[in-house]
Image 1 (cartoon, rainbow, N blue to C red):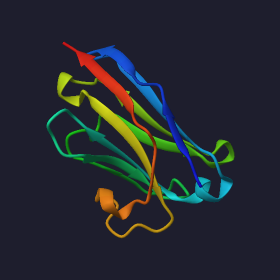
Image 2 (tube, helix red, strand yellow):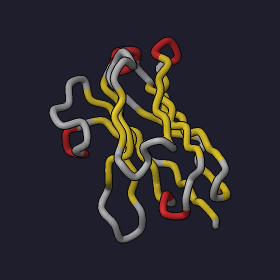
Image 3 (cartoon, rainbow, N blue to C red):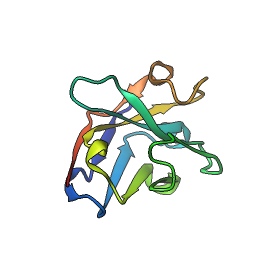
Length: 124
C-alpha cells in the first residue's frame, strides 16, 4: 500500500515561512497528481494546492494564491508546499494526497491516498 508521509510542520510566526514535504513510499505514485489540503478545528477539510504529475500545472485556493507554492521532485518522490507570509488563519492540519487521475483536483474525495497530516500553527 502506498504511503504518504508529511513533514515540516510546526509553529511559525505570521509573515515568516515554512516548507512542508510529502514523501511517497512507492515510485509509481511519484508520478501521481498531488494535492495539499488542510483542516482547522471545527471546519471541513479544504483544498490548498495541487500539482500535475509533471509539475507543469499548478492550482491554488484563492486564500493562498501568491503566498504558497507547490512543487515536486519526482526523482525524490516528494512534493513540497512552500508557505510564505503565513497568516493565523492558515493554522490547520495539512494533509498530502495523491491520485493517479483525479477528476476535480480541488475535491478531497477524488483522492484515494492520504498522509497522516502535519500540524501548522501560525502565531500572530
